[in-house]
Image 1 (cartoon, rainbow, N blue to C red):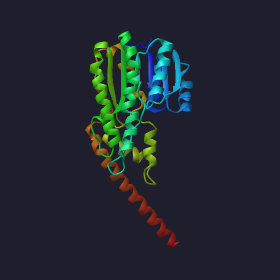
Image 2: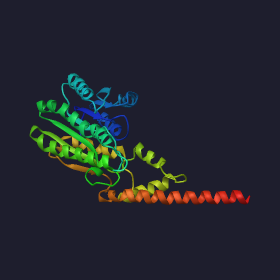
Image 3: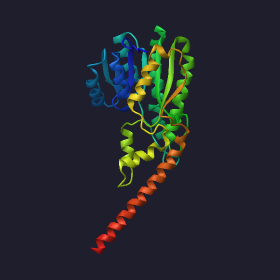
Image 4: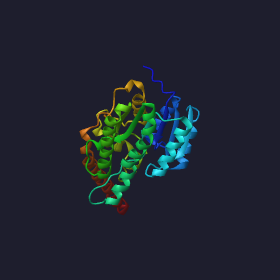
Length: 291
């Protein structure tokens, strides 16, 4: 099968790192006209420097999907320069953990403004242009936790669930205009967040031990990569996926219901590793006294 996207005009939000950067790179290498945005200007400019040799044309701007004016200005620039837009990849935003004990309503609303409202703002801005040409693809990057709730992750669970619901709704509502909308639900994708989670472990935990614990819930036994996600995005943006709309696809290596067990697994691992470290410190103290 040959996927030719060279004539497409593509927007990728949150494209400065991780999954967004991987997806933007894949579309650039297809020769698409590509518009990329992220909140940190220096980071998105660095991504642009890597993509310029490949993309058919490149628009790069600071973009804040939580701000109406930023979204409207970004999409206006794209459509004025290229006469329209064919593909939107809603990727901006990241996961956030939290429980009833450590969250506030304001924290939930701030997270929702980036995720739920970010997806909504971007779709609202591009759909009129897609309707005019009677062709469009919207690919929403979400998370498995949005469809299978996991304890200890209230912001991600409820806001991703809303994003998935919006994606399904628009996948039905916009289908008569030949605008297809689908959700890609992420499992454990190896981006910078797993480095951060590892650094939160007790002293003395090796990266191999940490990875082994995390991957116990992933049937495929490995982390996913941004390239794993990008391949599915390219497919959904092509005519090969012309009869797919309003669905959610897990990009998760088989991770599904096991995700509900992960918080307990992580807590037990933390406790065991902390106990191991404490014992090693006690032994060190005894050796110091004896010597």
